[in-house]
Length: 143
Image 1 (tube, rainbow, N blue to C red):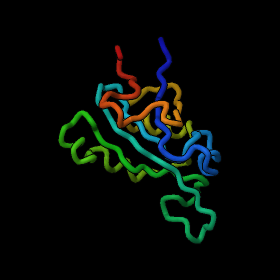
Image 2 (cartoon, one colour; image 1 turned 45 degrees about the horizontal axis):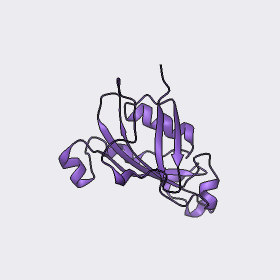
Image 3 (cartoon, rainbow, N blue to C red; image 1 turned 90 degrees about the vertical axis):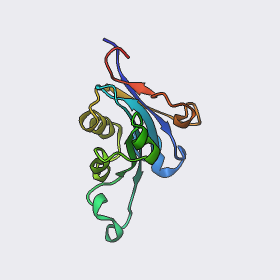
């Protein structure tokens, strides 16, 4: 059985301090993936670090580098793709967690019906999500 790798495009500045502070390698990442059911999903997320607890928003309390999910929708639904919004997935955009590879992989696998084994972030325009309509990665059987 081959290893299934979750692939992200680094969409932020890889050399920024906040990008270097985690094992993700970029403060903003995005992908288009195919899940176990064959659904195609667009996901874009980033992280924030709040140095002063007094100004830390509620979603980031207790987190050093808090994940924020900017976009999460089904690309294979014409209506959802046109609106960049999926009612079914919208509640997941309110979930926050420590921004690291392990937690991102866990979120994708548990919440988006995936079974990826590992993840990688490509920086410096090595891959570009918006250059294709195809998924960058898949965990669907036979793909």
